[in-house]
Length: 155
Picture (cartoon, one colour):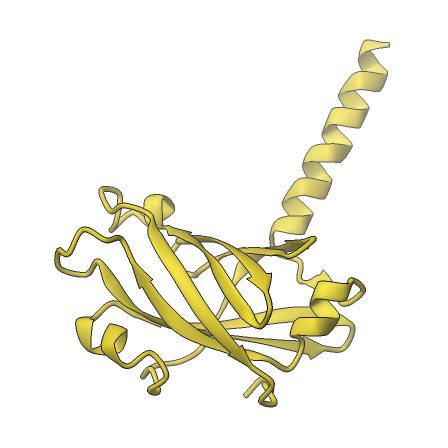
């Protein structure tokens, strides 16, 4: 019985670590709804200090049968004031992408964990930078994004 339990535990661990870097297959209603959308908006911790607010853009697309997310963010008051303006720099891939119900979860390349809920063309949720080694003392931020039906293609 112990051997069986160890084998099951090993299989679960392998599946978990495989899923961390695997895009989500396009199958669910949320993935179908989001594919081709670009969402832009702001994040803020509400504390008013330096680097506590900014803007982010996420786009959803399909590569083959895989659901993918592209991410850009900027920590600046200027970006916060004009969240629909272009954010300079390269689009980043995300890891640990998952969807369930109306929720999308992922981790940015800097290690910030995002949990966003989609309703009526908008996302609301949190960005928690606790896993980013340069931001250990930062507070989670509230995220608000508006989504458009523009074609979002992986460039």
